[in-house]
Image (cartoon, rainbow, N blue to C red; front, side, top):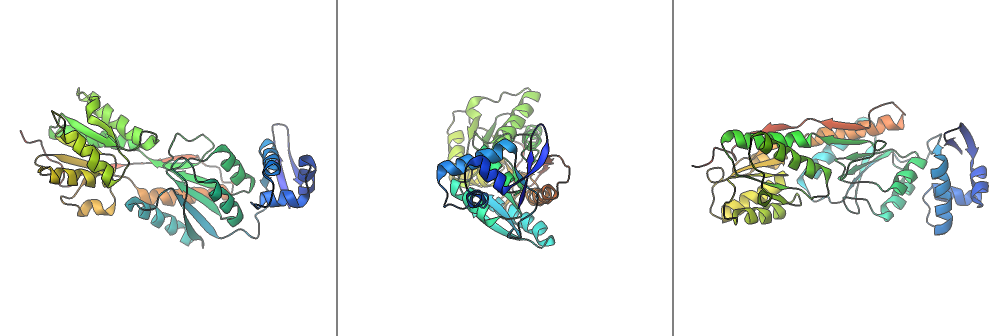
Length: 342
């Protein structure tokens, strides 16, 4: 099997025997490292991986053992929006005769070390990661095996060489807040997502921009961080409603958090939207069936997943493309917002 060596001076071809000679190990050992086998001593594995990193080794041919699968990786699967992403990946994979394997692993900052070991052995056509980041060594290992990867809604600001698909979170936060301001609300609370996720911070920045442009104060007591789940939305809403001067409207950073807001309002004896207006983010199917139907920011989750797989396939074929794609969001007005009760 041949590998391509790319560096600043030349592009050449090097055999497994030459790689083994440079590393001071046997050809079979290099092959085991390349194939993600675990029966290699850690120091030896590190030595071989460093050589691969130094010379930017990439396979010149695809392995016959490569599985016709797209691997979709979540750090948590128990979410409504996860289903939308799964359907999007399946739509494109099916058109290309590929299956989809779902993996739940690690945290939103990185899949687990066990995952990278497994995916190197499975050798899927490519990997789509959701709400995640990849450590440098994981990226190097995937690239050295010619396994392309794309991140949907990356947790942090991705490096230029990391392909990613996201949505216009800032403009979505701006539109949601402007809608409430135009209805007449002046004291508007926000429950965004975790403070270490770029989408959460972008939605918060959109909220602050809308408040600033309207000459309104986005006081710190109105800004809370949640977890994108119902329970977090409920708990943070109870904090906002306990303020001496509670908000008349709340922008929740996800539809699930917005459902928590609705429940907190109900148990507090407040009517939505008569006593409290609520806006969500995502526009998952359940948003239109909540009571009242939820005003929300539509995030094209299924399309984001479809574009991620298309990007993955272009990467496999070495088609030139932009590595960052951001899809538009739009406000969907339903029955959970109204002018404040004066």
